[in-house]
Length: 302
Image (spheres, rainbow, N blue to C red):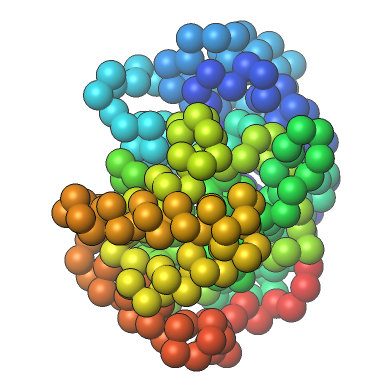
């Protein structure tokens, strides 16, 4: 028997990617009750592509949202997701999946994710990981076991509603914020590296237009999320060694963070969340990134 779940996808000018995303969901071994795709005022053929699939598959619902001209890119993305969630508020689903419009999922993605949820009733947010498709080749992305990327996140509905959904943030990082708030409420957040999706372009490129600028903006985002300075230094050093472009990418992350400090970039998350995330991060630095047993999913592999 399939799980009772719904998917929400925000889409803005995704005509060149969304058909492959839709095909990967149609091929899932367990299909959703409803898939709401929110077109965030696209100006390309995104709407036509979604509607053509919706006519053939009854579980797909097309929704058009009027995007505000002064909305930041990341904030508008969150508003589109929350609009989709409103359209399924009366649906009796147990799990909510958020899926970006440029992801290709393996056919058993959701089936295996739900194995993880069944194995741990305290698991509130889960995901696999993704690899970037760059020039026809897959490129590994650094991941953390307690971080679940928004592009492929799955929430237990009770968890999503308890934290109030995503916080719209100008610099991004709403997925990080959601995971932190979930842990604050006693839920476990976990990613399963054996379950890999394909991201059809490197994360952040669309908004930043280049990988170097993306790394700088990611550092600025870290500052706006109240990342602890010691944690940021440790993270940037690790990224210098392991994340492309090697060396310069980590330096640019740290530069973005320091620019936020110099500029006085305001904290974009609630103060209690900021305090909690700094407490977590300093412990990760002091204990060499060790995750305590109580913070681990009790489900093993999937």
